[in-house]
Length: 311
Ligand SMILES: NC(=O)c1ccc[n+]([C@@H]2O[C@H](COP(=O)([O-])OP(=O)(O)OC[C@H]3O[C@@H](n4cnc5c(N)ncnc54)[C@H](O)[C@@H]3O)[C@@H](O)[C@H]2O)c1
Image 1 (cartoon, protein in one colour):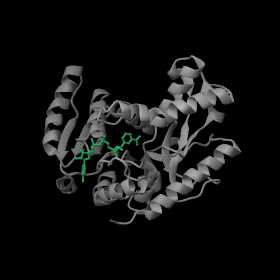
Image 2 (tube, rainbow, N blue to C red):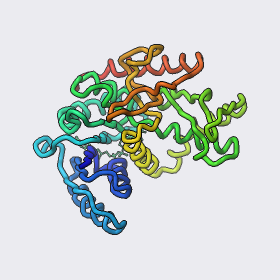
Image 3 (cartoon, rainbow, N blue to C red):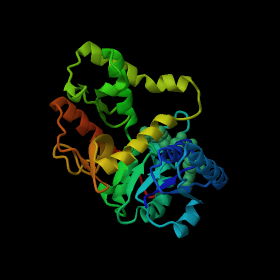
């Protein structure tokens, strides 16, 4: 029996992740947790019937609010946390982080309980690196069982490289590491097409950087009122598959095992899994310039996490 718990399951990300898990038949049991249980009940019916329509056995789906979940739920193999408070326009990164950490700290007993001894916890709630580091500092869940979801920046980098060199994105392997935003580190030294290393010149890199750095401004101009729910849900499903296959993905993980990085931080690094535990990939290599940028990113996360109190 495989089981997942999604906290914040009535939100844009949570609902779409649940739908992706069901469509891909990834778990036998799915536990949906949110304050908005009426939405979850509607989803429970819809998701079960979606399974039938898709021609497979529906998972066993339960619905809980965060309080009842503490009494009702046992441990899950995979725990997704996408619970959030809305980001206010113009709000500083540190103020948004503090507000979301205050929400997350109230959920730590539940997250720890559903993670149990062996579950993997995937944080999606932003700012994901500081949230993951701060959760690890609570010491209720081992560091290597906590990961932050940070695949989207690499997806966008792959799309931009593909457009620049004129190939399909699925032929491009590339990781955007570090921290989402100003401390993102596109790992140009590791770009591959069809598994062959590729050297991009300065002009190409600049055009790619301009496109990726402008992604959010272009998204906001659309005024959709939602985040990138579909690509995030597809990415979360790929994390589940990676925990089972051991495939490498760019995810936010603890820096503690990486010699050249300051410890007590989480940043995006190439990650592999063994038995549900995350580790930075053995084959990870980068230039001295990329190392320096990653050190800067880890330092910023460590400092931000240090500012987040217990609420
Ligand atoms: N890491 C990434 O790459 C990435 C990508 C997209 C979005 N995000 C982040 O994911 C988070 C979720 O985004 P969204 O668009 O789904 O937001 P949303 O506002 O649509 O959903 C948030 C949900 O959290 C629930 N919630 C609030 N307090 C709760 C509590 N105490 N217990 C349980 N549930 C609670 C709300 O009821 C709501 O359903 C945000 O922080 C967003 O910035 C991260």
